[in-house]
Image (cartoon, rainbow, N blue to C red; front, side, top):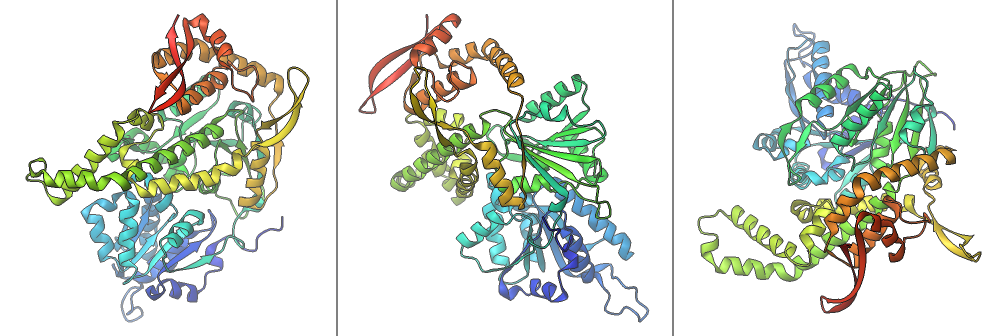
Length: 584
């Protein structure tokens, strides 16, 4: 591919472009520039420093004043981004010869609910939003609506400038809201994709890193559902095997209800802070989740591999790859990007979970549309229920009462927990929209192909086969305009490893799994989920593309003291085939 003409945004943005950004009459300005092309440098040099320039310079005054002419609010989505930008501002102060950047506030989107932050938005003369796509992709935190609405108020009176390397989500959101914005998109003329090579694979992490030379560093990004504890344990396992690995995740601690209330993991906070400051890690490898997918620049020529495990979100993939910063003067500073499924059904399971999550939220919204007014009328007509409450507390009381009633029927609370949803996420419109965006991303990746193959009796039948590896190649072409090589894992090694893994699951997990399901009526979605888990996760199916039937499942679980009984029952005024897990 022909090398891009420019590497940094400061090479192409003109004085007229800056004047255009600072003209609030045209609404929001959206600046689109690939990761590693100097967006932060541009903000410092062209938007912040000029606001400290002294108009009396040359008449006995220094070039820069101690106070900004206009108040500037810089907002970002991650602690790491905020830490990095505060460092950039401090460095700029040293370069300007001033003690402090009075008039410049740097804060995270998550603090916008604080009264202090609301005031900062009101008081700012210029608002700069870095990594603006996270207004949408971080919708789970519940602050997105507050931020966007506040900015919509502000854009009528002051310049609002969005920066992003991945505009897909924010474009959709702004267009959905019918907002006026001007877009300066430099993706086609900026970036370092000429320094990137791509490999798509079904190898697992250990099979990839065992062939990486000791002098080459690697960074692996795990899928969203891998917990912090599992990251830590995985890192420990690799270190026991002789690798040198560190792990990184969010510094914020999630509450039991899925919310965040400002509690920090101070050990991880120190590790992330050190990574931000050093711009490199000392171990050969690092395992991270999406909390590290932006705001951290790895400036290290030894970082040669970025490994994406079961990733599908276009925004996250581009941000993760963008953690690598290149030395423009060193043509040997290159990166190999791996996208791998690890030969696991994680992407397929994620796809089905997203479908179920969207369906559950839709069910709630339909129920809300038809029944909420009755609940509200009931509460308001019984004044003793809300005596002494503020209007805000009354609204929350009605919402909670309605949600409790909804979840109390048809095993919805159990289904909600199984789907990893919370009442807050179900009620959050932005979160539902985010799930739909994620479905749009993952659907083309898990799309299967139909092929003909002989069955056990020699007859040719048409079956669906996974095509994720080749679908990944299409995705690389779409996101990076690059071709990619394919590396398959060794079949003999794969079979042996899978056999060991299935034996481990059966020995350690099958009995507790069956005990948990004992006496529960399994039908429709719950029955299909059980069939899938037993067939694929525990290995009861003799064919990877087919679910095990009840006879095969019973043969599989009888040795563990359980059996599946098949009954016809009337449920919800409908005859259904129900499976019951019972002890023998």
